[in-house]
Length: 90
Image 1 (spheres, one colour):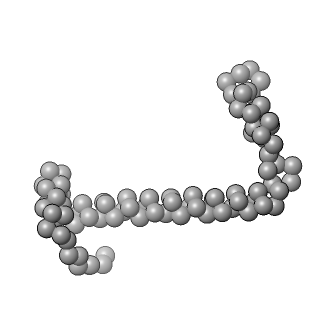
Image 2 (cartoon, rainbow, N blue to C red):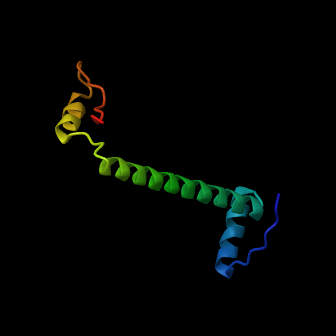
Image 3 (cartoon, helix red, strand yellow):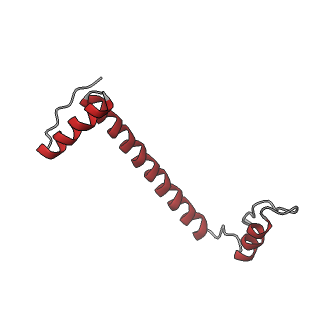
């Protein structure tokens, strides 16, 4: 486990202490939780961005589904004849 020194603004330090006290946890624990959640969020955003780039590349290659097929599929949801998701022809 690494050790890092961080300088907080006075207001942030006070809020951190209040949160740690309310949770009956150490300030280090609160900081680790906050950073873990932030890192997870950043990874999800990076994954979404990569998926967007992949989708744009697929579209540029003509791998698309006609809108009428998508509408038909969506309209079938919850019916006895629910359709499988449409796939591109390529």
